[in-house]
Image (tube, rainbow, N blue to C red; front, top):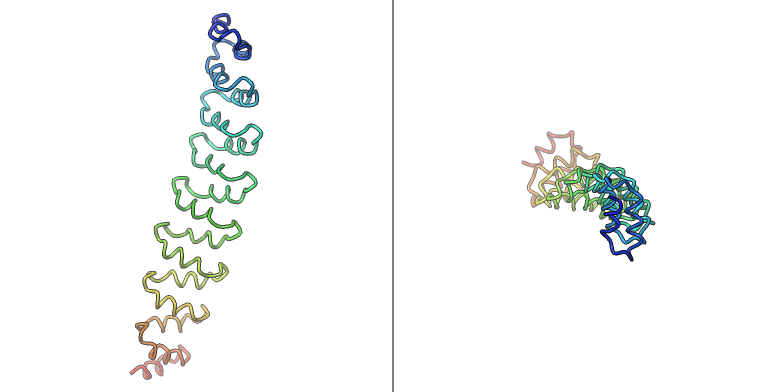
Length: 215
């Protein structure tokens, strides 16, 4: 077998011949794998040979330069079928936050992952705009208009259909603790500015005066 293997290569191909001879001849997969790389690419060949040959995806981590040990190691911590997570390697490995964020979502949720990666990772609340289906672009955009710490206003804005811009805008004019005033204002068509302003002149608990004023 070894003799026949040697004879498969041009005799000048000393490296391939030597490589073929370091394995049991029955280890056809490893031999074939080793032969896929230029013989000078000793690092890639050695890496490929660390795994059972059935680990095709792990061996494919070899698409990275061998010096890129971090990317290779990252790829190897996931099941090989988890191709999308392995693809989190599109980022520099030092960008651990973005990689970790990408990995928080089911890999099939490509839109959410893509959205998350548009922001600096410190924008945790903005990334939380991802609580909405990605197709809900209006709500996502609304959430992103406010400082992330202004969770109440963001939540308030998101209670309304985004097309109801006037009501949303009105609600956002008040401190969020003014829940009663906000709710009152929203009972009227937004064009009814006079009634809204009138209602807001009274403590909200003064329902009778408000109702009277509005007659």
